[in-house]
Each structure stands twice: as C-alpha cells, then as structure tokens.
Length: 151
Image (tube, rainbow, N blue to C red; front, top):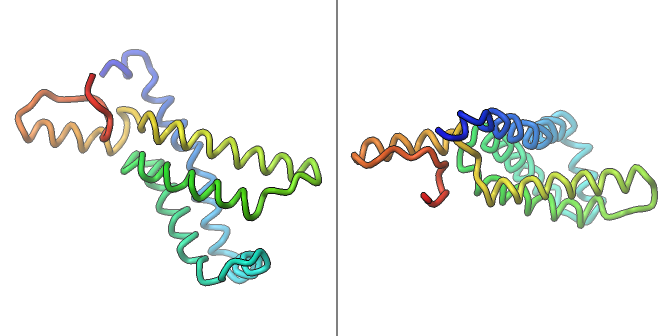
C-alpha cells in the first residue's frame, strides 16, 4: 500500500469524512424540522413530496462517501444534487451571507467532483471489497479503490 507509506491514506479518509458530514447533518436537520423544510421547498416551487428523497440522498450519499462505499456514484449524485440546490436555493448574491453560502456550496461540489474522479483511496470499503474480490479470484491483490483502473 504505497499510500500508507506516504501517510496519505489517512488524509484521504479524513477528507472524505469532512466533505460528507455536511450532507449527513443537513439530512438530520431536515428530519428534525420536516414541516418547515417542506414549506421552504414549496415556497421555491418544488413539490413537498420530494423531501423524503432529498433526505435519503443526503443521508445515504453522505454515509456512503464517509464509508468509501460506492464512492464515485455517491459523490457524483451529491455533486448533481448540490448544483441543483445552488440553482434553486442559493443563487442570490444580495448579501455577503448569500455569497458565502453560494461559494461554500460551490466548494463542496468541487470537492465531490474531485472525489468522483479520483475515488476514495485505499482506506475505504470500495478498496476493501476490491481486494477481497481479487484474493478470491486468485489474482494479484490490488490496493486501488473500486472503479480505479490498475496502472
């Protein structure tokens, strides 16, 4: 595991956790104030019936990124979700707060895109499952995460 020798694997894990925590907490906040969130969505022209799907995407996607399971798919879906949220809810630049929120959302989206492209690293369930499949097939053990082409 070349990443472990350089100490980068732990930083990849920490980065994934920090990037995904906002989605987990956002989902929990939406559950806590379900009716208020539903009304906020409706006030922006969205059907309130979408809220369970939003909560499921944020919670499942955030937890998947943290665990490094189906990371590229989860990060891609969360990035698309974030782009949509920016367009619908965070497009105003009227105040400095609006600008900061929009830029923060944009930054999360950039991090998710990088994660979707590069994968979760070797301290992830994707990498563990890939190594397990490689061992069971009798082939050489790879330290690359799922979806990463071998060099």
